[in-house]
Length: 184
Image (cartoon, rainbow, N blue to C red; front, side, top):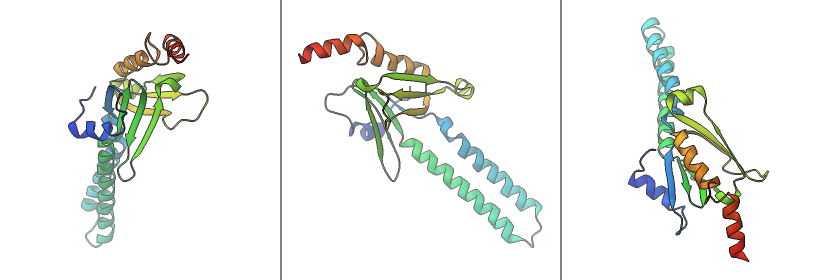
């Protein structure tokens, strides 16, 4: 699991309840940046090729190619900043995802509401070390339905399974029976 920087912990802690215990805090895997990085590299190669191959009497095409590269590079840098502000948190009470640069978004799902969890790892995910989690809650649409590109997903799956469905997990029948008995 990725270590949490002090700045990252502060960004996440403002959304936590006073009695919540953080179990895991991770950023999305760096592979989430691969499409933008590939496009930026491709735009650079294309701009360099156009710059070398075209005659000097068509500067507008050269300029357009380089402006296209700068746009692709800007988009890639924007995505890097987005990833730096994208946190997935598991506490003993809920799942939380905090993301967004200009508009901050926070999606939350109480662990008690999770009725089903799916874990998917693509071939690329196996190779690079990331996975995707899908959460369902009693047939309702949720703000936190899926989270893709989570690093160390095998370890995360084990921790999530324990928090949700283990003997003391909040979604386990034993935990629910104990909570119902305490409410009576």
